[in-house]
Image 1 (spheres, rainbow, N blue to C red):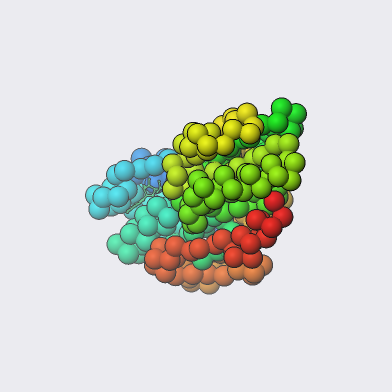
Image 2 (spheres, helix red, strand yellow; image 1 turned 90 degrees about the vertical axis):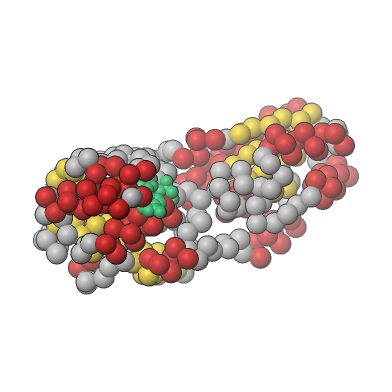
Length: 323
Ligand code: ADP
């Protein structure tokens, strides 16, 4: 290979910038040219591609979001869109690609590389931590820290006013953020998409807290929880349980931003570095991942097939005992 391109696609996540920096600098170090594709696959179709040098990625390690921007691109789902995209890669002499994103991004990468002669590596970037092939995805740790910080603040006011708070957190159909944040912030209950907690069970837990003289309670509700979100859960609980004054907080997109944590910075560096090393070794159609503190590669098709259940049973058990 001569020239590597890097792009970010799908939802943004803290840690993408450290990863972009690692791809650019590792690529240059190994003697390749490096380009950045703007706005994900849309920039590939629009030929919005810029040459990168070492200075292009100065001072971005600490920034959330992605300097390459990200987008959702409907045209890339079609054969014609991908043909146009590949022609632009050829025009720019790009023969290898690193794409940072989620399931959708990997699907696009799989399609493109099955149709054209191009070496590709995917890097898992999403706060949801719902990708197969890596214990952790870029952005998950930072997002969890953001949620913990927010819940600590909510606890102050909950405790002062004797309130019950329902806090809705992101994660799509994965409860990773909810569970970790729940443990670390001492939530009284956690509603997870992977586990059906009935309203009756939840009320029993809250009554337990009342019996222990708890002055406030915080219930974390995953956005993908089957009871239909924090407002719904709060409404149903209030019909039966009114020991505390009840409030709902939807944390929303603040969970997606912010300076990446040390964990996400180092993970971004490691994954970007490993992606380029993999390309150099002739690898393609793989995703990079972290397994027990070792960087591993997974076939992209296997990564796309397996949805992973990452809610460790021991954490689940512990969360209920310690709350
Ligand atoms: P994420 O990568 O976070 O899962 P999306 O699902 O929005 O985010 O996917 C990002 C982009 O990947 C889409 O906007 C689209 O351009 C591309 N993509 C997703 N699914 C496909 C598909 N089936 N075929 C080709 N490209 C796809």
